[in-house]
Length: 256
Length: 303
Image 1 (cartoon, rainbow over the protein chains, first blue to last red):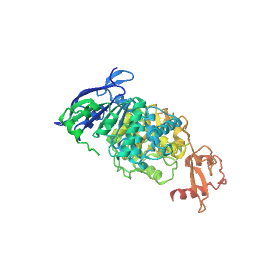
Image 2: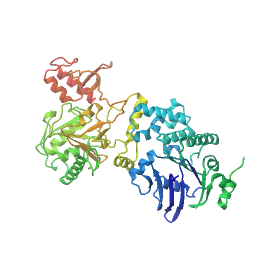
Image 3: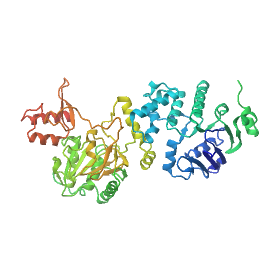
Image 4: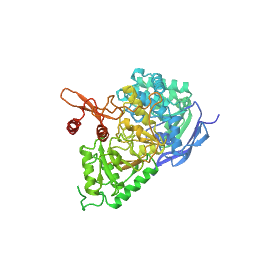
């Protein structure tokens, strides 16, 4: 099996300061990769470089496109990259309001990606939007409400629906559970786990919450100061951390 | 009124007119594309047609006949003052008759009478960017235009239908030009949208405050955006004109007394007057008292 996403030596500097350096890994279809590390360890920089939001200083991000096979998304033209990010990619922001249009109804938010790829039948768009709202456990009769009237957890679920409606193959998630209380987090994780398994999605999840990666991720990378210090199967890394920093990270989790 | 010698022909200096003409030519070469230009301060406030006036000044020749309409009317403040402005600064002929004019500056209407080759229609545009209220970043909207990412425009129409059950956008209705650029046709009623496409006259759009010029060359295709199951519909008030009885023209609703009695009259005054002169009489006008009603209507509109 060929990897869906192959990241080679991604390096990003902010001036003389290292954002992330020489990060390489392969992500296979259906696999969920977790990236953990403390604030400032370069995990968001890495994610943004992979998703095309930032221009890395060196390295390649090879994505297995549907039509042309593996392509370097960094050197690919901007229209192609933006087309990818509307169709095969999805990006879930930490703050739902970064990823939603707050002035547009929930249905419009979900339908935007459909309309962006050429859907022009109102009835179809609306049916799909309602269907997706139900899949993320939002009442269908809220379809015309603006996300501003939704709770934080609902906004996050709406953002997920909006991203998944075009059936992407790769989802980037930046702290998807950040800022939510624990019971809402648990339900969101449950939902995400279900969606990832049902749709056979590949995902890259950036988080500092080890519980999130324990539940969702198959594999784990631990980052510190812009470098990957440890990588492996999630349970292996969490249960038997080898690097001093991973040990510190695992032992820092509060036990209730 | 005679031309004063204190100004260059049509107020603007020749270099400025040259710069504006370049923008117009570029706009004509790329129909629907918003060309930035160095908009000048004009002796009138923004929102009063500074963009249209600059475009008119750049295209006017001494032998031109000029007409100005404001919401279809030749006799409202905006129309009268811009007409006087060019009478004074260019000394050109002006008219209120659509067919006689070679350059027509318009605010928010397309004349009812079909325009012909050789005529130029200049629109005053307040906000040239059709995506503006959906995407506030100029850098982003430019990118969306250049990459033809117009899904967002349909989000607006989707919102309309979900909220009102039909596409409630009734003016400044977006059109796609020659299958490429999505364009704001300025706040004309969507009733006028079908006239935009395949028009024999040149259409120029000037936005003074926003510093943009765009254009539709003659016989350019312009399609109003819609959904398959909610097709575009050019709508107007479902009445005949009270003065001339026209059933095919865009109507203004005028309240004529304190009890809320309404009359509907053609918004295009030249069209209405032409029909009345030809003997058509509407339900609220008797033959002969058209004068009185016209005066009353002027009072209503200017009040």
